Length: 213
Image 1 (tube, rainbow, N blue to C red):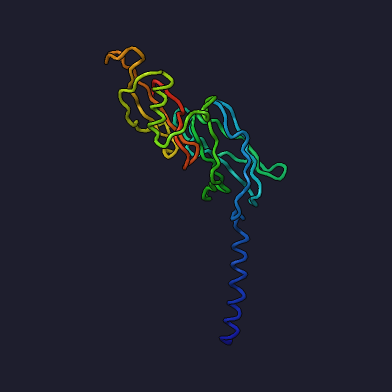
Image 2: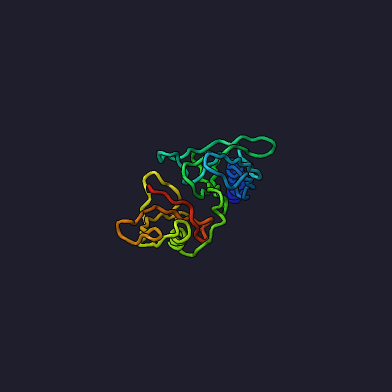
C-alpha cells in the first residue's frame, strides 16, 4: 500500500475505534440529579433515593461508613429504574451520624460521590444545637449545659473497631466532670461524647453522649 493511503487509513480507523470505546462506557460525565427523602432520619427509619440524569444499565447505592451494630459494613444496595429514575430505599445505619451517599454503575466501577449529599441520622433537636469551630468546644457545651456540671478533664478517644464513620465528620471524646454541688474527686462522673459536623466545612455540634464508648 502506498504510504499516503496507509496514513489515510490510520486516520480513519483511529476515530472509529475511539468512538466505539466511548460508546461502550456508561455516560456518567454529567453529574446525576439525586433526590434524597428525607435527608434526616431517626434510628430505624429509612430514606428513599431517586437518581436521574445518568445513562447507565445498572446503579447501586451505599452510605459510606455505615455499618450494622457489629461493625460489618452495610452492603451496596441495587436501585431499580422506575418512572425515568433509579429508585430505592437506603439501609438504616446502626450509629447516629452523617453518611456521604455514593453510587456505582458496576462492582468494579469507581464510586460516584455527589458533592454535599449526606444522609443524617440524628436525634430530635440535633441540628438546633450551637456550632463551634473546635469539636472540644461542643463537648464543653454539653458538660456545661446538659448535666450543668463542671468539666474536669477531656481527652480524644480512639475510634472503636465497630465504628467506620468518617473521622472528618465525627470526633469522640471521653470527659470527666463534677456534678453540681459535688466537687469531690469521688463524686466525679465520666461520659463518652461525640461531636459531628454537617459537612466537611461546617462547624462542630454535639451528636450524642453515652456511658459506653
